Image 1 (cartoon, rainbow, N blue to C red):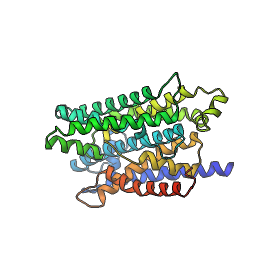
Image 2 (cartoon, one colour):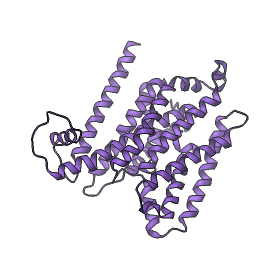
Image 3 (cartoon, rainbow, N blue to C red):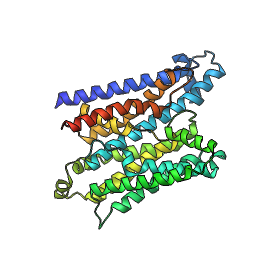
Image 4 (cartoon, rainbow, N blue to C red):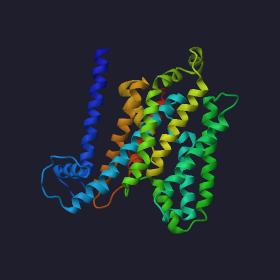
Length: 347
């Protein structure tokens, strides 16, 4: 038992160190290289910290670190954490290691909201309209899924899955219909959002996501013990007096809000909510009180790492983070499918 706790502590410390390293790499490397000390000085001065070195910083270094790279990295950290922890929660609720946040219609709802904002032309007047429409669409899609699945106070897992598929297909059809009437410029804008990316993220995007993502992550981690009960199976959960339908509803709603808050500022980013929980479950086991914080940390590490590699691999061009996660996640997903076909255990 003591060795198990020590190994988990070592893993958390290692992931924290890797995240710090990736963040420093993200802040200091790119088309304009910034020394680590200069980057730290920029952040310290902007935060008003005393006792900083008097070394001269160029306006270019300050603008690059504080206004471009740091908001981008923090947005990636928040989005990755949200997708990672939400994916772990949904896999626990559904009892399916291949579940991800898109299964309850969140992604399709966000896409419909985004395409509506672009089609109406409101995105030109403020950067907030696109995230607002995407967030609203994601929450409405989740509400539709739960409404269709809920019967007499019960919410069977299979019905919930089928409702999520149906809502996703319906909203996807509406999105496709709207796209057929959009001009080339707006179609390109929607496609740019759909791929998912962290470029051009500002502090406004960080402020927009930080509250709901942190609150949702904390709430889900506090509910981890109840998720352990649900993961035992519906019959076992009822036998110990757990309100199964209410717990599922709370967990699904919180995970959906957390995911939607992330997707609305980054666009659709695939595979983070699928592969991060699965890898953490292999390393740490199925105990959600440990698994959920690990997935939040690993999700942020994975997304910021993919974004950093995408920026540095083919300079001066960059590969958007949604493409990088797909290139990384798709082979792993195929590996999981092969294990299923061979009767392997995914847990």
